[in-house]
Structure formats: structure tokens, C-alpha cells
Length: 397
Ligand SMILES: *Cc1c(COP(=O)(O)O)cnc(C)c1O
Image 1 (cartoon, protein in one colour):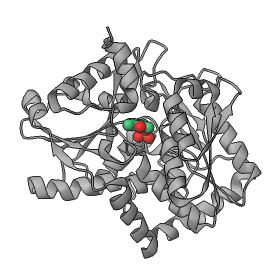
Image 2 (cartoon, helix red, strand yellow):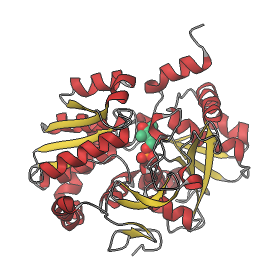
Image 3 (cartoon, helix red, strand yellow):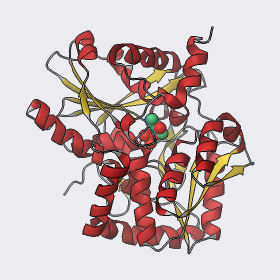
């Protein structure tokens, strides 16, 4: 039984987690809490989940030995290729899992919130796959900023509803989704996109994403003759790709875990998303965790050039990994990440998502031994970020 870094029966990781929700939401969350482990353990569920991961998502994703990068940094670097998943990132591992849970709970209507639109697209994709109604809440500002993803969601048959209150971004979309859920408790399932939200969401999402570290173990055994690497490195927004890449190694203390956050214009610039450095304990989206806030507890607007890391909190698992020093947290600025994105493209022929590019910057921050096996979770591909790369590097001039 894994307990030291995993969730306890009350939904806590050390002092973080739990379910701090309005009373009106209690029946929905309780229904999920009572059923998710049972459903996930059913052999018919396992079969359908694994079959879809294989046939629809394209798993297992390769664990690719990055030869030129390894030579350059004089260590052994492997890339876990989540960028090759259908829809271009790891997020679909989770949305497939949650929609299968929703179906088994008899739900017919799916809601989600999205910031940059990546989780919205992953949710709209699985709703199309299953023929379920899909409503995605998105801030009005984000709808303008992320037009291609809005178009994708619409093509996939989802309704995109604008959130028009507050800063008209992710947190406002989340508020709208929660309001919808309260008003539609019977037929609606809320698909959350990262290891955040009230218990049992962080645990459920981590379990769905844990396929990443399960595959890493099998693949390393085949390629290196041992299951465990020396390091696993992953970027952290809410923390789902990192949770998936770390999951099977959490209790293997010899495996060093590195979580990479977005420093934006710099940790002390007032424009960043380096939650573990700047965050204090508070409650966000129903979970007690570290979050960036003002002295009187108002959530601070986060900033990062990568939309997927632009989140003011971090999942409770990661808050616990930070608290216990089980994982090392490193903050990477916009400009460091952009340079790494360019470097990986030229060195390995892989254009990474800007989120993922942050994880690569660790290669310039830390010294690894020639014998070290370093696994970097390549959470997503850079197609969605091409305009940001073009503007930043002035490719159109
Ligand atoms: C959404 C996203 C992230 C950040 O989300 P996590 O839950 O922290 O994984 C990272 N990389 C990519 C490519 C994403 O799309």
C-alpha cells in the first residue's frame, strides 16, 4: 500500500487537498468519491480504457533516447513522447478516463472549463467519441486569444459558453462551470483537466495519467535493463503531466523528481506563475493547497508566456511534494523556456509546447552525471504555440 506521498482516505496529501466545497455540490462530489475507485477497478472499465488509449490515443507513446541532446549535456536523456498523443498532449489520457467514469455513473451531459482551450479540446474530443453533449466554459478574453481552439471545439460539436465576469479568464470559467454543476446535479458530469479541484479529482486524474510512468518503467527495463531512472523532469501548471510521470516513482526515493514551474518575467517580477515559491496555503477550486494570493487572501493573477502553466495554484499532491522536499521545484523564465524550445527543435527535430520547453531548461540549470538516466516528460507538441514562437523569434521578418 502506497501511503507516504499518496492521498489518504480523507483526500489529503499531508496537509493539502480535501474537499472544500459549497454544500450544494456535496451530493455530486460524494457520488464520485463513493464510486470512482470501484468503477476504475472493474475489468470492463480497464479493458475499455486501455483499448481506447491504444487505438484512439496512440499509446504506448515512445520513450525516445535523445542522442544529440545526450551528447550535448553529457548524460543519458530520454524523452517520454506525450506530444505524440492524439490531440497533441497528455490531457486526453485523463479526459478518456473521466468520460468512461461519467458514462458508468449514467451521466448524459458533460461540462468543463478551459483556459487556453487545450483541456476544452480534449474534452470535446472524447464527447464526440462517446456521443455526449458537451459544454465548455471559457473566459471571454481567452475566447478571443485562442480562436483556433474555439474553432476546434465547435467542429467537435461542443458548445463554448463565454464567462463574462471578473477578469474573464480561467478562474471565471471555473466559477461558471461550478455554477452549472450545482444547477444540474443529476445528469451532468464535470470533467476537470488537471490534478486540482476537490477530492477525489486530484487522485482520479493522477491515476489516469499514471499510465505515463507505468510505460516509462516497462520501456526503461527494455532499453536500459532497469526500471528506474535517476531523474524524472516535468513541467507543472496544475500538475497532471508531472503527476503522471512521477506516479510510479513517488515511493522510490532513489528516483529524483524535478517539477518545473513558470517564472514568467522572473520570480520577483510580479508577473509569474511560480506557485511553490510564491504561494501560501489557501483554498482554490475546492482544494487546500499552495496558491498565489495577496495579503488579504485574494487570488493573484498569474502570468506565463505559456497558457498551460498560467495557473495561480498547484495540485495538492505537488504542494505536498514541495512541503516534504520529495520533489525539487525549479522556476524557469519565459526567455529561458523560449530558448530551450528553439534548441530542442534544432537538436532533436521536435518542436515542443512552450509548457514543455520549461522542463528542458533544467538541462542548463543542473549538472547531471554521464551515467545518469534523465527522463523528461515531453508533455505536448508546439503546433498550438507556433504564433507565439513566430512573434518571439520574429520568424516572419
Ligand atoms: C495543459 C498543459 C500543461 C500543464 O498542465 P498540467 O496539468 O500541469 O500537466 C503542460 N503541458 C502541456 C503540453 C499542456 O497542454
